[in-house]
Amino acid sequence: MARVDAVDVRDRKRDRILILGAAGRDFHNFNVCYRDDPRCEVIGFTATQIPRIDGRIYPAQLSGPLYPLGLPIWPEDELEELIAFHHVERCVLSYSDLSYQTAMSLASRAIAAGSDFELLGWRKTAIPSKKPVIAICAVRTGSGKSQASRYVVDRLCKAGLRVVVVRHPMPYGDIGKQAVQRFSCLFDLDEANVTFEEREEYETHLRRGTVVYAGVDYERILRKAEEESDVIIWDGGNNDLPFFRPDLWITVADALRPGQELASYPGEANFRAAHVILINKANSASAESIEVVKDNAARMNPKAEVILAASEVTVEDPGIIKGKRVLVIEDGPTITHGGMSHGAGFVAAQRYGASEIIDPGPFAVGSIKAALEKYRHIGKVLPAIGYYPEQVQDLEKSINQAECDSVVIGTPIDMRRLIEIQKPATLVHYELADMGEPTLGQVVERFVANLG
Image (tube, rainbow, N blue to C red):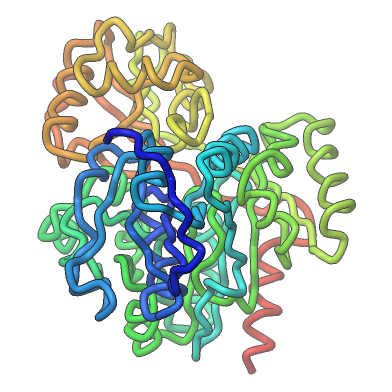
């Protein structure tokens, strides 16, 4: 898009707004704050983090009567040109897992191009529920939200309550068809043709018999979830803020990454707002690292209850690892924009005696090779990214041409159901466990008691 000089638009009756996003929080902010507001004119969205999101249209059936043609989604790289060409007056940052350097760099780009820069708070964007809500958020991707969610769901179900999980949006397919999604079994995932990234978040709940909702229009999703639940679990994505107003707000911090709780947006906001700060992976961290997180909690959120938890890593078949040269596959978002060099798969390979963890770089092809080149912090692991069919094919080829004896699958899903892995492979499991008192289980018991 060619650069166009901005003009004075102060006489306009509607503020022209550009929403900066990544196919999730951006759509939600539009739906709850701007879709029906005649004072605002949203000209579209920008997109990043997720491949092949830009170039699409946010559909008319979700955009409301003020936007009968829907709204375009552009690459974030075109920010300055978009501000000038469309005379944008406000840019609204609406995605997560951003370092402060990145967030303020976006602000500087918008301001230099002549636009205001805005952040929306959780009270303005979190929808009230008729049913009790437990929100499980994090300070960074990869801290262990999913483990914490499964733990809480198990405790609530044992108390005889009907529990529904609502996941953070991942509308990577047909946005219009994904407005409200309900999954109750693995077959539903196959029918919906979901991506690897979606499966990683849904499968573990479904295997436990828990219904999962997701989609785009979270007002509608919430009302559907309320119909079949006693308690709703908001299972957050990245380090985003909750979409529903929580009665209990749990924020997961990572004992292996002390200081990250104060280093990213909106992770620090989650840390400061939480009722409970759960310091996960404390069984693998040093005492000094744990104390850093505890000290930050005491200073930044002294009213929060601070709890330690262990992340217990086990494998399906240790014999496939011991003494073998292994390829490790990890959860994609955790080690790409989540910023971690490795995850549970790497830990399992070391713990169960792999003779060598091979470097996947020389064997990666296509989009997988491009991801390793983009995210230079990634260690000797392969990210399980599969946002579109060709990328799944790239992943399968990268795995099968790797020179190794066996494969360690560190994602939450059994990839062997979805792609052909031509070498022996074993799954890694990781679950949250209590570590001293108070425990997360005790927090859940109090919550249930207060429900009467």
